[in-house]
Image (cartoon, rainbow, N blue to C red; front, side, top):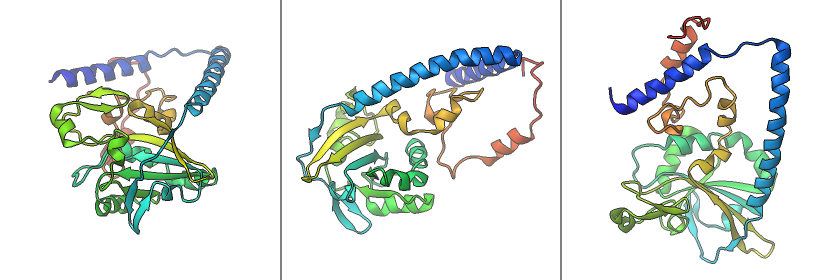
Amino acid sequence: MSGDNRKKKSSKLVTELQLAQHRIVSQDEWTKERIALLKKEKEFMKLQDKLSAQQRALPWVKVEKQYSFTSPTGRVTLADLFDGRSQLFIKHFMMGPHQDWQCPGCSLEVDHIDGLLVHLEHHDMSYVAVARAPIEEIEEVREKMGWTFRWVSSADSDFNYDFHVSFRPEEVKAGKAWYNYHEIHPKNSWDLSGNSIFYRDKHGQVFHTYSTFGRGGEQFLGIYRFFDLLPKGREEYGPSFSLPDWARVRDQYDDRQVAHALSAPQSDGSCAGH
């Protein structure tokens, strides 16, 4: 067994042991502890409000460069992507030309969107995914997944490079690129993921207001809010101890795992070794 597999198995066993030995208390004691935790939760929410205000208060950068993209109906500009609204949310989708795999993290993130589109658009915000792959390849994936949000190609644009989610051949060759506000070794990764926000004023001027990458994208992964409250948590046992440990493109999950979990006998917690 490899070191990664041993670490993964060990982490899972620790979780199972913790579940088997979890404290059991009376309803009155549970309520007392729940009220104490509620106080901390409210403090955290207030801190989150302050952080959100600081995120909105970041200075803006005027977008002087003229970016254009390929859509299923032809060429469109960055200004066009606002679609008459003043706020634009860009999902930098990790998909380069002729990519023979689909990013599970990006796919999971955008799976949250279609049901929210009507609410986002009525809050003066347009949502658009951008990838460096040709539009024909993008449309193939979009149609396969049944996604209805707008998705365009930056294949003939510097957009991905200027916003540091794609790397030029010389950067990959040199092993030096800029991502998530620090220098990284891109190895064989030509494209990574992220999120950027733009504002368009009444004069048509476009400003870049915010970008986030890496774990910053968890802000838009509502599924984690469910996992974080479950007894088993996120169940990210390795090797990366993050999203790739469990997330799959939704048509690539093994349903036999679900069937096994539903049919497996439920432990009464008396055998901590299982």
